[in-house]
Length: 319
Ligand code: AVI
Image (cartoon, rainbow, N blue to C red; front, side, top):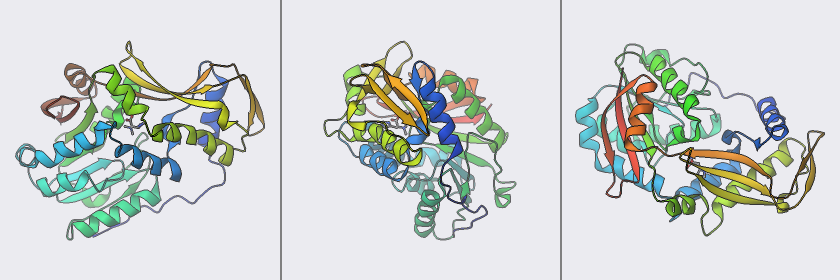
C-alpha cells in the first residue's frame, strides 16, 4: 500500500546547491567536493555495480547479516514499530528487516524522488498491507514524518555505512537529529564499516574492473554537463588512499598534468599531481562505533558482525 504525502520536487536546469558546492570546492585549497553529487542517474547505476564487485565487501556482508539475524532483531525490537529508513530502501536489504520485525508502517526518506518512488512501489508490492509512506527530502535538514505514524514507536534504519561518508562531527549532528526526529522511545539499527587490513580497503575502492574509477570520474562528466564545464576528463585519474590518522579511505581525482578549465564561466587551474578530494569513507572500530553513537544521543545495546569482523550492524536505543 503506497501512500504518498510529498510530491517530488520539479526538475531544474541548474541546481544552485550543486553549483555552489562545486565552485566553492574547486576554489579552496586543497580542492574538495561533497560526495552527494556522485549520484546522478549514471552515478547511481555505477554505485549499484560497485555493490556487486568482488572487492566491495560492505553490501554483501551487511545483507548477509540482515538475512541471518532476523530472529535477534525481532526479539530486540518487537513488532508494530514504524521503520524509518534514512535513504531509499534497497530491494536487497530492507525486505530482510521488514520480514523479521513485522512493522506497523515503513517510511523511507530520500532526496531523489524518482528513485524513492520506484523503490517504495517495489517494497509496497512485496509487502501487501504494510503502509509505505515515502518522504522526499534531505535527511541532513529538518523534516517532518508523516502524520500517519503519529504515536507509533519508531525504529530508525540507516544501513550501508553511509554514516562513514560524513566527517565525524557531522555524523554526530546527524545522529542527534535522528534522535530528535524519532522520539524518546526510538531504536536505531545502523551499519558501520569496520577498520581492517589496508590492502583490502584500498581494493574495495580501486577495483580491478575500474568501476569505482568510473564512478569517481563521472563527477567530472556531471559537472561538464550540468554546470557548463570544460574539465578535461582524460587528464584526471582516480585515486583511493588510506588515511590512517583519520581512519578513512579517501577518493581523489588527480590532475595528470597542469590543467586549465572553466566551470559556469569561472576559470580554474590545477598543478600536475594536485587532487580534488571527492569522498571520505570513515571506518570505525568496535569501540569507535559505540563512542560515535553515544556522542549522537544513542546507547548501543547489541552488535552483529561477520566471521571476519568486516562490517558491524549496531542496534542502539535513544539515550
Ligand atoms: C555510499 N557509501 C557508503 C559508499 C562507501 O563505501 O563509502 C560509497 C562508495 N564510494 C566508493 N565506493 C562506494
